[in-house]
Length: 125
Image (tube, rainbow, N blue to C red; front, side, top):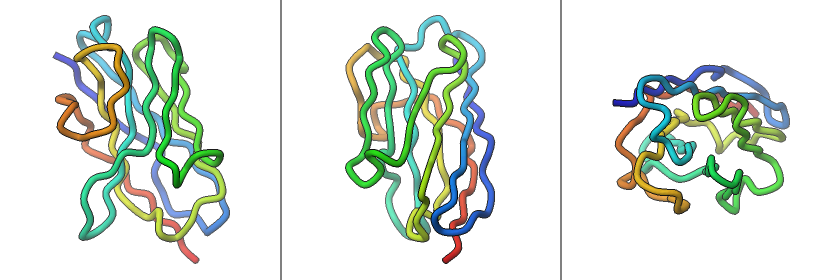
């Protein structure tokens, strides 16, 4: 069983940067990657970024490409999401998910079983 916990959320102003951290514990040797999602009030949970541990391949939602960076900082246990030039509409709860299925990139919440509780990011204008 894999457990996931996020940290690093907070309140920032538009244009600021913020780094989130995701730490996995338990059977982390079975992980193929990790992903970040976010859910704004009244909206569905949406994909933000994914990183594969075998090759270091990354994928981003078009809206964050060039501003967000996902990186593995500790083998199969810790992933960071550096968010730059944040926008007010990116206010949301950000969730980390552990990829236990296979090495293929994944972009949908239903592809993940292990989730953290989320960390709130508020971007003020």
